[in-house]
Every structure is written in structure tokens, then in C-alpha cells.
Length: 176
Image (cartoon, rainbow, N blue to C red; front, side):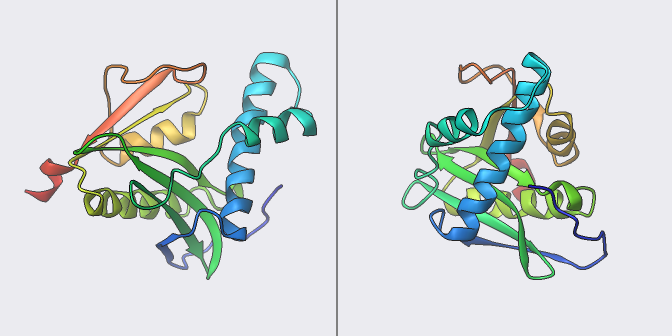
């Protein structure tokens, strides 16, 4: 799905949301299709088929991005849901960031930074002192966003076919 929303200086707002709500599911589908199709183009020189994409989406549930050990955030631009991010508690002091997405037509308008600022606050509400994430090397916009917002490369804390680089952010340093 492409987004033709105009770039503007309208503020972004971010709030927690039910990960099973229709607009959350729409954003999660767009997120998955975006990252999966990038993978298919890079490795297979083609888009994923609808069957491949739907099968992969079904195999990547997001139901753990809900209380008591997780949460889901939706970012709105002009009142319309255009971005999302999820957090899950890994242990008593660490939260994992996942499913970070800003619709392509609104990238570069401040929505990613606003989303990550809300992620910091949300992680603290889960009791986290640290946020970690893994991502792929080809997701260059996401990696640049993380670095601009205080994340630094860390040693691998997870494994998986799509975990190629790991980032972390110390929230205690921000509180000082």
C-alpha cells in the first residue's frame, strides 16, 4: 500500500493503542509488507507473492505487544494513524523495540523521532532502564533513525534469520 499524504509541518502525536485494533492491524500489515518486500527484492529480485506475505505475517504475531509485558504505540499525523512501534519486556530492566514503521509518504517529517521519544517514555512505564532491538543491515532508514535518536550498536543479544545488527539505548543516562 502506498501513501500519498503530503509532507507538512503538522505535529505528530503518539499514544498507546490496542495491538488488535483495526488501525493497528493495518499498520502492522503495511510494516510487514514493506520489510518483507525489501527482503524479497534484495535476495530474490522480486516482490513477495501475496501467499508468501500473508504466510509470513501470520508467522509473526504481535499479540505480545500488550499488557502486562508489552505495549503498542500508534503515531498520528493530522489525526490519522501513520506510524507504529511495539515494546516487549525481555527482563526486569530491558525492553525490546520492534515493529517500528512510518508510512513511506511521511518519512522525514519528524514522525520517527516523535515515535521513538514516546517509546522511551513507554519503556520506562514498563520498568525498563534499557531498550534493545535487532534489525537488518538493508533497513538503512531505520538504522539512521535509531542512531539519530541515541541508539548505539551493541553485541548480539538475539539470533534469527533477519537479525544482522543490534542496537541499544540506556534510558538511565537520559534521566540524569
